[in-house]
Image 1 (spheres, one colour):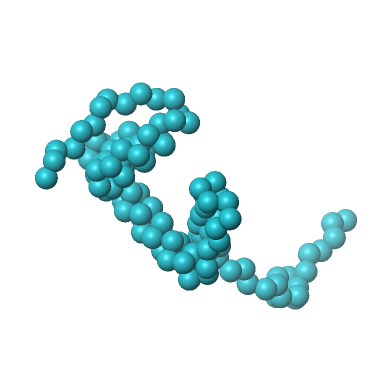
Image 2 (cartoon, one colour; image 1 turned 30 degrees about the horizontal axis):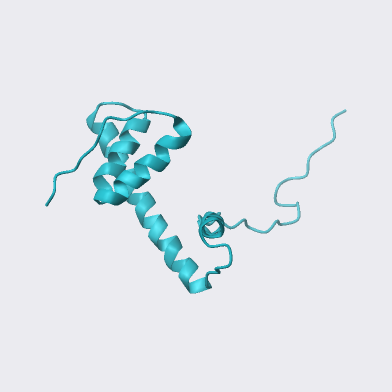
Length: 117
């Protein structure tokens, strides 16, 4: 014979789970330790950095998804993300970001020289 299960309403109630919060604080602290070992960051400064990185992430993701849609692909490719970085970030910052992205991947990109304004 099978043991009968108790109906869901009879079981003790569990606490509702909170949705996970997306935070960049761990990564910000890691980079800060690499750059300035003895420097700390206040909670308000961390909140500002979290908002900044959320905004940049959202801008890059939306631009990359638009590029993917334009190219007719249903999959977001690395090329879409790299092009989004070039379009969203200004001149020198885009170049440095691309260099940091390319180092781990070992990919060579064509030279990108944005027009001078």
